[in-house]
Length: 198
Image 1: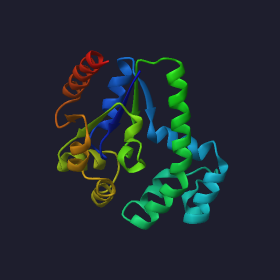
Image 2: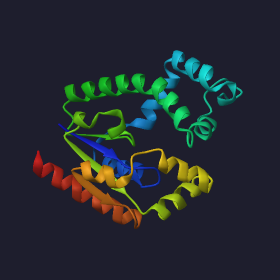
Image 3: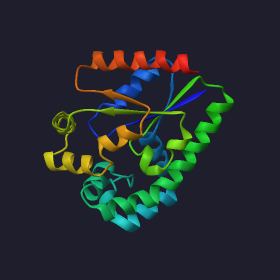
């Protein structure tokens, strides 16, 4: 089984690239989805978040309003650090458990789709690391298209390790400045290359 760490900053096209791996048969472990499970399946995590950030992060039905929480933490390093300290330990336990399960199922390719692979210190869980990059102005445009303001988009980009540092540590780099079709072809080409390495 090959474990590929797929990372990249906000607006790079990382999650779209992950979907193309999934369409070619890879098992995708999404950091975002596991983060949601860490909050939804473990009430103690939500209670800690409310204690730290207040009731403003809750919807009327008492579930987490992730958009509001994002507004609070992105652009405030101390708040982001507090969020990470609460959620990430449980998230990583779930991720490790899921990886063990897929190993017993003998999956040929598992992709960990996570923006914070380096920040979490789990690069050594992976056989290879792929970084998806894109021009900064294009990333901002994409994030604005998802409903963020320009300043919110800039804050999200600034909250992570710069692309150039990720690229220096990566085994593979895909530029995502073009069309979806171009990105899909690059992913498919890399899958062929990974099979030859296994």
